[in-house]
Length: 208
Image 1 (cartoon, one colour):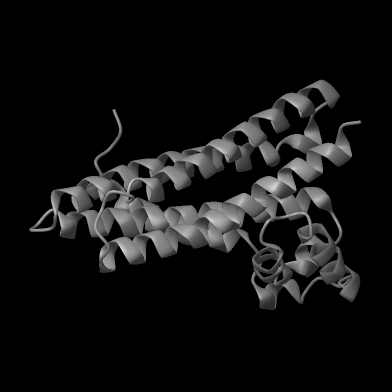
Image 2 (cartoon, one colour; image 1 turned 90 degrees about the vertical axis):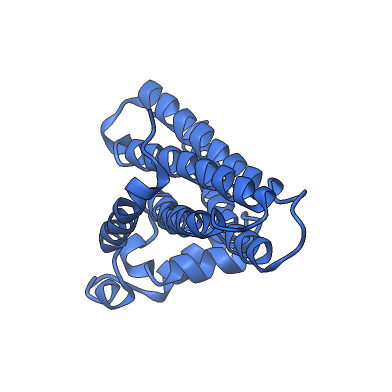
């Protein structure tokens, strides 16, 4: 049985902070001795295949020196950023749902609870994808295909879950809560969509 939203908010925040520490900061990236402008250009070129290339480049370019020109590293960092954003969104919606329970329209409350469930599921799926990506360098070709198939499936499912969150507000009257949640969710979806696109591109290049 899943833990109640109120019991995992602090864990989500803590995990999100820990996750962000795993991704090199812009300052840390400068410590890599072999960093060149080619790294940023590699990211820019890679992001062209995504639906949101500007978001893709902006979010990944700060880690250019850590990524270098390695497609696997690029994909892992993209998934990591997606996971961090999904975790923050899950925590945000969880907190908001508690407030909405006291006096808000029941449709708003229901949409928020469903949104949290969807983002909570998305977090699990993206986390599983990242775990698989961290193991790909140590596997043979058949295992690589299997693991990347899992990554593609889970990232796609995570994007669907995030879209389901915003779909749940279709029958909710316009208001500040709906506007704020949907706007924040859209930003998260862009990161997940971009990460999925980079995953698919990585698979296409590695599997003939």
